[in-house]
Image (cartoon, rainbow, N blue to C red; front, top):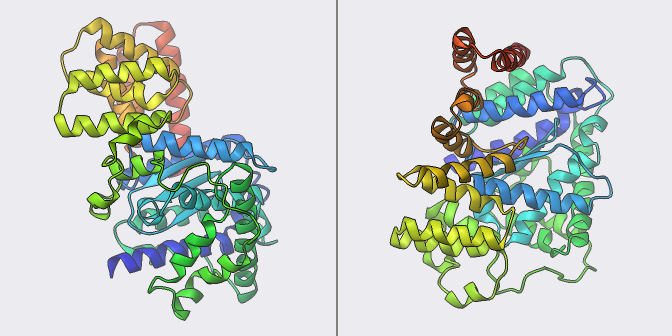
Length: 435
């Protein structure tokens, strides 16, 4: 029953986002790049405060790489989008103004294939590309930030308390009229078609969305009341309206192990993955791939079976040599090194290399935590910055500000003092913006 409430609420979230977020569209509140970056930062912090995000770097990296791949084929390309994985069993995903897309853990487990999963990502990207948020209403006000905050809060609370989340929704948004509901249905179909084209241009199976909606419509929740609450067309209706002309052009053979299969098995809900779903049972597939995700999956699986850390670190170094720039391998090696007393020179060389590669990138808490730990040994003068970032991104804003003030009070280096004062000003302004 709890899963049913979460799923219903999750889909209701999309409805209310689509019917009431006209106030939050880029045009209605003069949405600047700075606004967008502040909102994304606020959203991640808020979700982390509720422990709602799956803070595993590898799935995060893979998901954002797939977004970039789809966006290359986008006739209306997006910029500065962040895609996050949520620790929720709801079969759901969402897009928000400010270019934030969320994919729920339940969606990973429900999707039968990488193509199905990416069909949902393409759909959410389409809502942003097609400017659905700014097109929903002419009733534009300056209350967009408040509305967004209320919606985001409800998404967060739905992870723990569906009733409280519903109350938050109702207090944040006015009820949408029937015309708005009908309009959102048209937008859903428009996003379906646009997402279908994204998949097709990216050489994925464009028919995957059809199979996804067909299976979704067969779920017990597809009753009339449920359909009204979510104000989406039936899954079977959406499937039938998608083009039936495109052929199956999936990049992968039916029996080929994909990065999606590997990450789903290693990181998602283990209760949903039986040995029958284990992509590592067929060891021949290890020799039939050049995907570093799948190769690293084999190494990770073997490590979990044997516990041989030194051998795994050596294998990861070999994988890095073969696939330069494949960041999950760099991080996993660094993470393992941080767990043992390895040679300081090797450890710090790995730290410095990874630190250079992730500069100016949005990373998950597991990365920040590891970097804060190793900075104390390898780059002591930067350790406070990593600690502040860890507190801040965890949703402990006041603790981060307080810690930074204490560090500033003790700092003698004029360059560090100037940079830390600038950081403090930025954090205080951001905290004030979203009190």
